[in-house]
Each structure stands twice: as structure tokens, then as C-alpha cells.
Length: 522
Image (cartoon, rainbow, N blue to C red; front, side):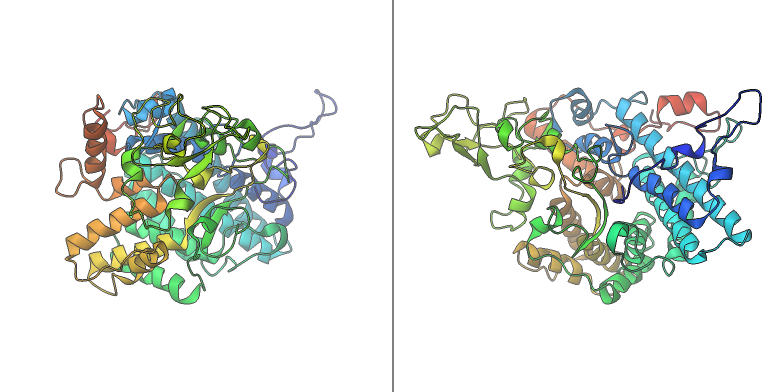
């Protein structure tokens, strides 16, 4: 959602717009006759960016991920989708899995088409080859981005680099994870010196060289290529000019979009386009926040009290992660005729019901000692004070410099080369926590995993990151530990199983594509 008019965006790829006489030569706009210049191809790439923001689906790319995140049990919800996942009830017919799958492959197919057309136009000798090269590189980045996130959740996924035009072109998922990682790593290395280091004006938000390298670090970690991950992270650290915000909350506010440690984010602006707003606020907003302050919404999701208490009380990330106080309409107005302020407290009761961590309905609006709550309401995704929940402006942040720093520490620790403490201690320094030292390799591994969870909570990174470092029943099982802790703490009717470690391929894909095989655990 680069901030330029959508125009036709590339839905014109296959959609006929006009014809004069049905029995004469129709005038169709297709990929073949519309994309004849580099500038027109740039319109095509905008549609692929659109897919990581609000896109065409209410249940969009980020939205579906916060349903998946509930598998871990630190982020919970009361609506059917989140509730099914936090209870481990995941099946191939799940709506959110199907939605995420369709969004990802729709945009991979678009990227494949853009890449093919860019090569054709270059062979034809079109002008503005610099723009053509950049647009092709952006398409390669976005294709890598979609594939990377697919293999994180689904492991072996259908893989193709060709535009799918009919049911005769359906790809196979045999060795899908390996093929996807090879493509991701090869393409991101190839485009690093093609993409600009930064953009200006309406181009701000496009993929940069640093976004490509940051995604490459994550791909190398997933592939357990530790030395490659470490050296790539060091390139960003030494040459990118990035530094952590001193105020953690700047990673998520409107004022600091596309700056500082924020490396890649989906552009969101209801002010620029009424259809381009962030619908995550409505799902994470406190249920008792007055409507006049942005309280309109579904209030689906929050963090558990147990997870909120994992943070050191002095951790400076807390205000940027959690809503610590807000005016509540649950208990009526106080003597001054105002909604009283409720504050988070570990002394407040909590359970997993919809109202289980809110201020008590019979609390005295004039007694601060009773005006306490224990839900982990999420400040990263909520804009307290907005007049209209459909006018949200916050971008969706996908890649941050803190991710690179923690990736460097992990790669250095696993490879036994470089300084494994620098990255994690820089993240902890910003959080106001003591530096680490003198740990064994396994102890430091544990510390890096936990630091990543606390740093990126509610950014929908926790499930795939814990999954990446875990094996069901294995010696190293961070995901299983988190799920079991959730089960035990809240007496959840759920049993840890191999299904918790991979999402199923959607049912319509398995039934409609004879070239794919479902995971054996499903």
C-alpha cells in the first residue's frame, strides 16, 4: 500500500475492462498488453505490497497470523478462531489458514508474473531500465517474503517460480521448504545491490537493500546457516546506520514510521485512503475503553496475566507492549462525572473468560484500590484516544533492527564465532536490563529465545520463532514448554501433540491440487 492511488493495481492482469462489440475484436486489458513500460509494471508491484497490509481481505495477512499466534497460549482470545487455536483445535478446513494461503499464493503468482514481464520488457529494449530492474528486484523480495512466511508455518509448501495460468500448472510441495529456502536465499543475495538503501516521497515503504538483507538473516537462521546469518547481520550492523530507538514504543507509533530501527513495514493510512486502515486495533482494544476514545471493536485478543508477569517490573518495554492504564466505562463514572482510570495489577484476579481479567463490574469508581485489571491489553496494536476505530494510521511493522541484533547473537552462539553477547545485550540495554555474560552455549540459547519472545510479543512472530527452535518430544522444545505452561497454568483441556508444530495445508488445496501431499500428522 505505497501511498499512491491504487488505480487498477493489476487486478487488470486478467480482468476484461471493455469491449466494443462481442462479435468483433474485443479490447481486453491483460498482462500482455497492459504492461508495456517500466512505469506500468510499477503499478503491478503496488498490488503485491497491498497484500501485506489490508489488501483485499478483511482477514488479511497480519490478521490471520494473530489467529495462528494463539497456538502458543500467551496471546488468547474468546472468539472462535483464536479460541480454536489456543485450545489446539486446528484442522485443514480452518478459515484463517485458507485465507492466509490464498493471500500468499495470489501475491506469489503476481510476483512471478511481474518478474517474467520485466525480463520480457528488458529484452524488448524498453526505456527506463533502472526502474525496470528495481521493480523486478522488489517483486523478488516480496515473493521471498511470502514464501518465507509460508514455510515458517507450513514447512513443505507448493513451490513455483512460474505464473500459474491454468489447472495444468499446479505446483508440487515435494521438497517445498528446501526449494523455497534456496530461492529465497538466492534471490535476496541477487537483489541486494539493486534495491536502493532508502526512498523518498511516495516511494517510502518499498523494499530497500536493508530489508532484503534483514529478511536474508531470518532465512539463514531458519535454514540453520549460522555463519551466513552472522556475516549478513554484521553487514547491516556495520553499514546500515541503524540504531535502536531509546523509547521502545517508537517502533509502533505513527510519528516514527519508516525511520530509526524500523526496516520494513506495510504502509497504512486511512487518511490517505479510507479503505487502507489497520483493523488490528479493533481486535486488541480493551473491551471497556469508552467508544469516544477508540473503544469500538471486537476486543478479541489480549495477553494472559501469566505472560504479562514474565516481564521484569523494571523492563522499559512494558509501556510499549502493554496498556498499563486507561479510562474504563465498566464501572460507571466517578464523583467528578468522569470515567475512572483503571490500572494493571498482578493482584487483580484473572481467568480465560472474555471478562476474566477486566476490572470488577462492582468496583468502586472512586476507590483506586479496586480499579485494577490483569488482562495483558496490547499497546503495540491499539491507539487509545482515536475518535474512530476505522481511522487508524499505524503501519504494520514486519522487520526491525532488534531482529537483526538477536539474529546475530543466535548465529554467533550456534556457530561459535563472533561476539554472541553484543546483539542481545544491546536489546537488553534498551530495555533497562542487566547485560548477560559467562553463560554456556545452551544457557545463552535459552536466553536469546526468551529475549526474542519478550521483545516481539504480539508482533505475531512468537509461534513461528519458537517452532523454528523446537522439536516435539525433543531435548530442545521451547514451543512445547510454552504450550504446556499455558495448559498447566489455566487448566486448559488440551494435550500437546505433533500437530502443534506445523499448520496443515488447507483442505481446498489438498482436494484441488493432485500434486500436493498433506502433512502426515494431519
